[in-house]
Length: 178
Figure 1 (cartoon, helix red, strand yellow):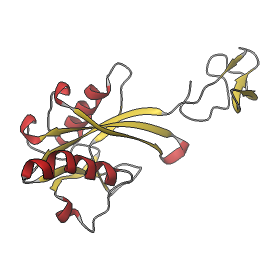
Figure 2 (cartoon, helix red, strand yellow):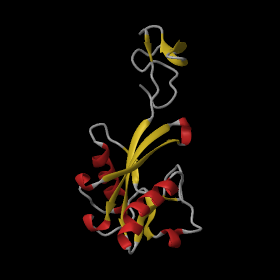
Figure 3 (tube, helix red, strand yellow):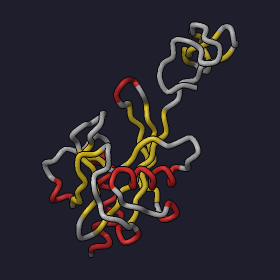
Figure 4 (cartoon, one colour):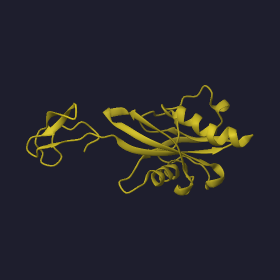
């Protein structure tokens, strides 16, 4: 399995050809007699929501989307569950810590990011009262800020984080603030 289109078989080094398998042309190694499956990279992130302050966002300092606002998140490590990976990414990017068991799934999205890599990301939400630490920008972000939807209007969210921002706010921001 690869996340990028391969030219050579990762097992034996033979140049890959194509073979029609399961209704699609797929990369195929004649030497190994096997399909080189291309799959998306798994990711996870978490929206921390406070009814008074808003949703915690990061201003990206790496591609894709450098300079745009996003929910904290990133790629899963090979030994992580999605909730553990989301909690780790939150802490790395913002300094804020949460217990992975406190996270609630808010949605998923699939995207093609830069360099022809596809990503499937699981998004979680957690109330700010379940989080500890003072938000500060980690090495992959320029800034960390709390935003309500009204405060954020006119700013640019890295796609599809706009949808995830709204879902998180509707789930834990507006309902709890009333």
